[in-house]
Image (cartoon, rainbow, N blue to C red; front, side, top):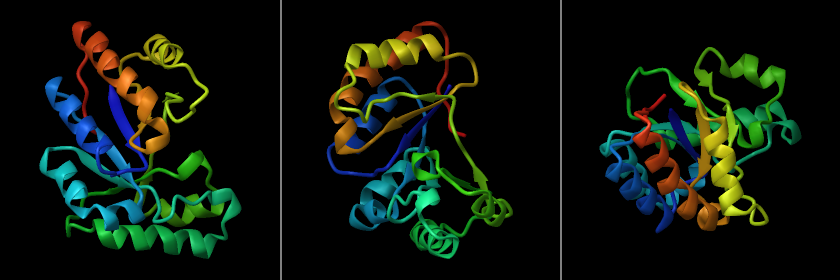
Length: 180
């Protein structure tokens, strides 16, 4: 299973996620918002130092459908400057909200692998019951699933309930959790 986390890194929750992942021997891919990288650069470095992969999620968490192409691409490059480690590894990008225009895809494709998902956990929705969230994630997971969780404050209540139970359930079934 490919665990992915969008929107961080943020204090308190991202370190909790890292501790939880470590306790299950799980690795994940974190799609980071540039503003959060800038504000919490030590946490960002901790992600890669602990063997997780990072991807670009724009600098300001922009909706590609509501943003002009030039501004959108410039925002992605601004985030990339914070992330650049000098490697030639193909870069990962996830559009916030999953919203991206065809022209934006065409301009990004030579430089980025655009990553979407199979399961949107719904952890960010405060009206979504955490037990229903967990059950939805369990029922829809199969080998090779890309699932999105969020390391942001809106998701904290659901995520802290769902993530350890999700990891435990699928670990017991022999699944492994790897980076993209």
